[in-house]
Length: 288
Ligand SMILES: O=P(O)(O)O[C@@H]1C[C@H](O)[C@@H](CO)O1
Ligand SMILES: Nc1nc2[nH]cnc2c(=O)[nH]1
Image (cartoon, rainbow, N blue to C red):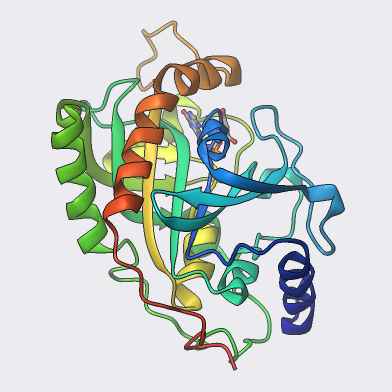
Protein backbone atom coordinates (compact mmCIF):
# COMPACT_ATOMS: atom_id res chain seq x y z
CA UNK A 1 0.00 0.00 0.00
CA UNK A 2 1.29 3.43 -0.94
CA UNK A 3 -1.16 6.29 -0.54
CA UNK A 4 -2.94 7.80 2.43
CA UNK A 5 -6.40 6.56 1.40
CA UNK A 6 -5.11 2.98 1.21
CA UNK A 7 -3.56 3.12 4.67
CA UNK A 8 -6.87 4.62 5.85
CA UNK A 9 -8.86 1.77 4.26
CA UNK A 10 -6.72 -0.78 6.09
CA UNK A 11 -7.09 1.13 9.37
CA UNK A 12 -10.87 1.47 8.87
CA UNK A 13 -11.20 -2.26 8.14
CA UNK A 14 -9.28 -3.11 11.33
CA UNK A 15 -11.38 -0.69 13.39
CA UNK A 16 -14.54 -2.31 12.02
CA UNK A 17 -13.26 -5.75 13.12
CA UNK A 18 -12.01 -4.96 16.64
CA UNK A 19 -13.09 -2.68 19.46
CA UNK A 20 -9.48 -2.23 20.58
CA UNK A 21 -8.01 1.22 19.91
CA UNK A 22 -4.27 0.70 20.42
CA UNK A 23 -1.93 3.20 22.06
CA UNK A 24 1.19 1.09 21.62
CA UNK A 25 2.34 -0.89 18.57
CA UNK A 26 4.93 -3.65 18.90
CA UNK A 27 6.89 -5.26 16.07
CA UNK A 28 8.35 -8.63 17.09
CA UNK A 29 11.77 -9.72 15.85
CA UNK A 30 12.85 -13.20 14.74
CA UNK A 31 11.89 -15.74 17.41
CA UNK A 32 10.36 -13.05 19.65
CA UNK A 33 6.72 -13.31 18.56
CA UNK A 34 5.65 -14.96 21.81
CA UNK A 35 5.15 -11.51 23.27
CA UNK A 36 1.89 -11.25 21.30
CA UNK A 37 0.54 -14.36 23.04
CA UNK A 38 0.57 -12.55 26.39
CA UNK A 39 -1.96 -9.90 25.32
CA UNK A 40 -5.32 -10.15 27.14
CA UNK A 41 -8.74 -10.08 25.42
CA UNK A 42 -7.15 -10.76 22.06
CA UNK A 43 -8.46 -10.11 18.59
CA UNK A 44 -6.10 -11.46 15.98
CA UNK A 45 -5.99 -11.33 12.19
CA UNK A 46 -3.90 -13.28 9.70
CA UNK A 47 -2.04 -10.84 7.46
CA UNK A 48 -3.62 -12.62 4.48
CA UNK A 49 -7.07 -11.48 5.69
CA UNK A 50 -6.18 -7.80 6.17
CA UNK A 51 -6.88 -5.64 3.11
CA UNK A 52 -3.70 -4.01 1.83
CA UNK A 53 -1.35 -5.97 4.11
CA UNK A 54 1.72 -7.74 2.71
CA UNK A 55 2.55 -11.35 3.65
CA UNK A 56 5.32 -12.45 5.98
CA UNK A 57 7.45 -15.28 4.58
CA UNK A 58 10.26 -15.91 7.09
CA UNK A 59 10.40 -18.81 9.56
CA UNK A 60 9.96 -17.44 13.09
CA UNK A 61 7.52 -14.75 11.88
CA UNK A 62 3.96 -16.04 12.22
CA UNK A 63 2.16 -13.43 10.08
CA UNK A 64 -0.56 -12.30 12.51
CA UNK A 65 -1.65 -8.93 13.79
CA UNK A 66 -2.76 -9.26 17.40
CA UNK A 67 -4.74 -6.64 19.35
CA UNK A 68 -5.15 -6.82 23.12
CA UNK A 69 -4.47 -5.37 26.56
CA UNK A 70 -1.16 -5.38 28.39
CA UNK A 71 -0.88 -3.85 31.85
CA UNK A 72 -3.83 -1.55 31.23
CA UNK A 73 -2.60 -0.29 27.85
CA UNK A 74 -4.15 -1.27 24.54
CA UNK A 75 -1.59 -2.73 22.15
CA UNK A 76 -1.32 -4.00 18.62
CA UNK A 77 1.42 -6.49 17.95
CA UNK A 78 2.93 -7.57 14.64
CA UNK A 79 3.79 -11.22 15.09
CA UNK A 80 5.93 -11.30 11.99
CA UNK A 81 7.62 -8.44 10.19
CA UNK A 82 8.33 -7.56 6.58
CA UNK A 83 11.97 -7.54 5.52
CA UNK A 84 13.43 -5.81 2.52
CA UNK A 85 15.09 -9.06 1.40
CA UNK A 86 11.67 -10.73 1.08
CA UNK A 87 11.08 -8.41 -1.85
CA UNK A 88 8.60 -6.15 -0.08
CA UNK A 89 8.52 -2.55 -1.05
CA UNK A 90 9.93 -0.92 2.08
CA UNK A 91 7.50 -1.42 4.86
CA UNK A 92 5.18 1.46 5.69
CA UNK A 93 2.49 -0.45 7.61
CA UNK A 94 3.55 1.60 10.62
CA UNK A 95 1.38 4.34 9.08
CA UNK A 96 -1.66 2.15 9.63
CA UNK A 97 -0.79 2.15 13.34
CA UNK A 98 -0.60 5.93 13.30
CA UNK A 99 -4.09 6.05 11.79
CA UNK A 100 -5.33 3.64 14.49
CA UNK A 101 -4.27 6.24 17.10
CA UNK A 102 -1.01 4.65 18.23
CA UNK A 103 1.36 6.93 20.19
CA UNK A 104 4.44 4.72 20.67
CA UNK A 105 6.16 2.08 18.55
CA UNK A 106 8.25 -0.65 20.17
CA UNK A 107 10.53 -2.59 17.81
CA UNK A 108 12.47 -5.72 18.67
CA UNK A 109 14.92 -7.64 16.51
CA UNK A 110 17.52 -10.38 16.51
CA UNK A 111 21.00 -9.09 15.73
CA UNK A 112 24.62 -10.16 15.57
CA UNK A 113 27.14 -8.45 17.82
CA UNK A 114 30.28 -6.68 16.68
CA UNK A 115 31.08 -5.07 20.04
CA UNK A 116 33.38 -7.11 22.30
CA UNK A 117 31.15 -6.38 25.29
CA UNK A 118 27.96 -7.81 23.75
CA UNK A 119 27.50 -11.58 24.05
CA UNK A 120 24.79 -13.89 22.66
CA UNK A 121 21.81 -13.62 25.00
CA UNK A 122 22.53 -9.96 25.85
CA UNK A 123 19.99 -7.26 25.14
CA UNK A 124 21.00 -4.04 23.43
CA UNK A 125 18.75 -1.03 23.85
CA UNK A 126 19.02 0.79 20.53
CA UNK A 127 20.44 4.28 21.03
CA UNK A 128 20.75 5.07 17.33
CA UNK A 129 20.93 3.33 13.98
CA UNK A 130 22.85 3.31 10.71
CA UNK A 131 20.40 2.74 7.89
CA UNK A 132 22.76 1.46 5.19
CA UNK A 133 20.07 0.72 2.58
CA UNK A 134 18.43 4.06 3.38
CA UNK A 135 21.67 5.99 2.99
CA UNK A 136 22.10 4.36 -0.40
CA UNK A 137 18.63 5.41 -1.56
CA UNK A 138 16.54 2.39 -0.52
CA UNK A 139 14.56 4.54 1.85
CA UNK A 140 10.88 4.00 2.69
CA UNK A 141 10.32 7.77 2.37
CA UNK A 142 11.50 7.81 -1.26
CA UNK A 143 8.81 9.11 -3.61
CA UNK A 144 6.38 11.99 -3.32
CA UNK A 145 6.06 13.09 0.30
CA UNK A 146 2.65 12.71 1.90
CA UNK A 147 2.38 15.85 4.07
CA UNK A 148 -0.56 14.27 5.89
CA UNK A 149 1.93 11.96 7.57
CA UNK A 150 4.97 14.18 8.03
CA UNK A 151 7.52 16.56 6.52
CA UNK A 152 9.61 16.00 3.37
CA UNK A 153 12.86 16.21 5.34
CA UNK A 154 12.36 14.65 8.79
CA UNK A 155 15.13 14.83 11.41
CA UNK A 156 16.38 11.49 12.72
CA UNK A 157 18.46 12.76 15.63
CA UNK A 158 16.77 11.60 18.79
CA UNK A 159 14.58 9.07 16.99
CA UNK A 160 15.03 6.50 19.82
CA UNK A 161 13.30 8.23 22.73
CA UNK A 162 15.70 9.00 25.56
CA UNK A 163 13.06 8.89 28.27
CA UNK A 164 11.96 5.38 27.30
CA UNK A 165 15.59 4.23 27.14
CA UNK A 166 16.10 5.44 30.71
CA UNK A 167 12.93 3.69 31.92
CA UNK A 168 14.07 0.48 30.19
CA UNK A 169 17.38 0.55 32.08
CA UNK A 170 15.48 1.03 35.37
CA UNK A 171 13.19 -1.86 34.50
CA UNK A 172 16.24 -4.04 33.76
CA UNK A 173 17.60 -3.28 37.24
CA UNK A 174 14.26 -4.10 38.82
CA UNK A 175 14.09 -7.43 36.95
CA UNK A 176 17.70 -8.26 37.86
CA UNK A 177 18.88 -8.34 34.24
CA UNK A 178 20.86 -5.06 34.13
CA UNK A 179 24.05 -7.13 33.75
CA UNK A 180 22.93 -8.36 30.31
CA UNK A 181 21.63 -5.04 29.04
CA UNK A 182 23.41 -2.03 27.55
CA UNK A 183 22.84 0.66 24.95
CA UNK A 184 24.37 0.56 21.49
CA UNK A 185 24.17 1.40 17.80
CA UNK A 186 22.29 -0.93 15.43
CA UNK A 187 23.08 -1.08 11.73
CA UNK A 188 20.68 -2.38 9.13
CA UNK A 189 22.08 -4.21 6.12
CA UNK A 190 19.92 -5.56 3.31
CA UNK A 191 20.56 -9.27 3.82
CA UNK A 192 19.52 -12.05 3.42
CA UNK A 193 23.10 -13.32 3.61
CA UNK A 194 24.96 -12.82 6.86
CA UNK A 195 28.16 -10.72 6.80
CA UNK A 196 31.42 -11.71 5.21
CA UNK A 197 34.43 -11.30 7.49
CA UNK A 198 35.57 -8.19 5.60
CA UNK A 199 32.08 -6.67 5.95
CA UNK A 200 32.05 -7.51 9.67
CA UNK A 201 35.42 -5.81 10.15
CA UNK A 202 34.22 -2.76 8.25
CA UNK A 203 31.09 -2.46 10.41
CA UNK A 204 33.17 -2.88 13.55
CA UNK A 205 35.57 -0.14 12.52
CA UNK A 206 32.64 2.14 11.77
CA UNK A 207 31.49 1.89 15.39
CA UNK A 208 28.48 -0.38 14.86
CA UNK A 209 27.62 -2.47 17.94
CA UNK A 210 25.04 -4.84 16.42
CA UNK A 211 23.92 -5.66 12.89
CA UNK A 212 20.62 -6.94 11.55
CA UNK A 213 18.30 -6.84 8.54
CA UNK A 214 15.31 -4.79 9.71
CA UNK A 215 14.06 -2.07 12.05
CA UNK A 216 15.64 1.05 10.50
CA UNK A 217 12.93 1.53 7.81
CA UNK A 218 10.18 1.02 10.39
CA UNK A 219 11.77 3.59 12.69
CA UNK A 220 12.24 6.08 9.85
CA UNK A 221 8.55 5.80 8.89
CA UNK A 222 7.46 6.02 12.54
CA UNK A 223 9.61 9.07 13.24
CA UNK A 224 8.38 10.72 10.04
CA UNK A 225 4.76 10.48 11.24
CA UNK A 226 5.55 11.60 14.78
CA UNK A 227 5.51 8.32 16.70
CA UNK A 228 7.69 7.89 19.77
CA UNK A 229 10.03 4.91 19.33
CA UNK A 230 11.73 2.39 21.59
CA UNK A 231 13.90 -0.37 20.11
CA UNK A 232 15.86 -3.32 21.40
CA UNK A 233 18.08 -5.96 19.81
CA UNK A 234 18.43 -9.42 21.22
CA UNK A 235 22.01 -10.43 20.51
CA UNK A 236 21.74 -13.93 19.05
CA UNK A 237 25.31 -14.45 17.84
CA UNK A 238 28.74 -12.90 17.56
CA UNK A 239 29.51 -11.78 14.03
CA UNK A 240 32.63 -13.62 12.89
CA UNK A 241 35.44 -11.07 12.46
CA UNK A 242 38.49 -13.33 12.29
CA UNK A 243 39.75 -15.59 9.50
CA UNK A 244 40.95 -17.97 12.26
CA UNK A 245 37.41 -18.42 13.60
CA UNK A 246 35.63 -21.52 12.28
CA UNK A 247 32.19 -20.63 13.73
CA UNK A 248 29.39 -19.59 11.45
CA UNK A 249 25.94 -18.17 12.07
CA UNK A 250 22.62 -19.65 10.89
CA UNK A 251 18.94 -18.75 11.25
CA UNK A 252 18.09 -21.77 13.45
CA UNK A 253 20.72 -20.63 15.94
CA UNK A 254 19.22 -17.14 15.85
CA UNK A 255 15.74 -18.54 16.60
CA UNK A 256 17.12 -20.76 19.38
CA UNK A 257 18.60 -17.79 21.29
CA UNK A 258 15.28 -16.02 20.68
CA UNK A 259 13.47 -18.89 22.40
CA UNK A 260 15.91 -18.89 25.33
CA UNK A 261 15.53 -15.17 25.95
CA UNK A 262 11.97 -14.53 24.80
CA UNK A 263 10.67 -14.59 28.38
CA UNK A 264 13.14 -11.91 29.50
CA UNK A 265 12.39 -9.75 26.46
CA UNK A 266 8.69 -10.18 27.13
CA UNK A 267 9.09 -9.16 30.80
CA UNK A 268 11.12 -6.09 29.85
CA UNK A 269 8.66 -4.91 27.22
CA UNK A 270 5.65 -5.60 29.46
CA UNK A 271 7.11 -3.65 32.37
CA UNK A 272 8.18 -0.81 30.08
CA UNK A 273 4.63 -0.58 28.70
CA UNK A 274 3.24 -0.66 32.21
CA UNK A 275 5.35 2.34 33.20
CA UNK A 276 5.06 4.43 30.07
CA UNK A 277 2.87 7.49 29.90
CA UNK A 278 0.77 7.77 26.80
CA UNK A 279 -0.09 10.99 25.00
CA UNK A 280 -3.53 10.49 23.62
CA UNK A 281 -3.07 10.40 19.86
CA UNK A 282 -6.69 9.99 18.85
CA UNK A 283 -6.54 13.44 17.24
CA UNK A 284 -3.43 12.19 15.29
CA UNK A 285 -1.38 15.42 15.40
CA UNK A 286 0.27 15.09 12.00
CA UNK A 287 -2.54 13.35 10.22
CA UNK A 288 -5.24 15.51 8.69
O1 LIG B 1 13.21 -9.61 12.05
P1 LIG B 1 14.60 -9.63 12.60
O2 LIG B 1 15.37 -8.38 12.28
O3 LIG B 1 14.62 -9.95 14.08
O4 LIG B 1 15.35 -10.83 11.88
C1 LIG B 1 16.75 -11.11 11.92
C2 LIG B 1 17.39 -10.65 10.63
C3 LIG B 1 17.01 -11.77 9.69
O5 LIG B 1 15.70 -11.59 9.24
C4 LIG B 1 17.05 -12.99 10.55
C5 LIG B 1 18.36 -13.69 10.45
O6 LIG B 1 18.42 -14.80 11.30
O7 LIG B 1 16.88 -12.51 11.91
N1 LIG C 1 22.91 -9.09 9.34
C1 LIG C 1 22.77 -9.90 10.39
N2 LIG C 1 21.54 -10.12 10.88
C2 LIG C 1 21.43 -10.93 11.94
N3 LIG C 1 20.34 -11.32 12.62
C3 LIG C 1 20.74 -12.13 13.63
N4 LIG C 1 22.07 -12.28 13.60
C4 LIG C 1 22.52 -11.53 12.57
C5 LIG C 1 23.83 -11.28 12.03
O1 LIG C 1 24.85 -11.77 12.50
N5 LIG C 1 23.89 -10.46 10.95
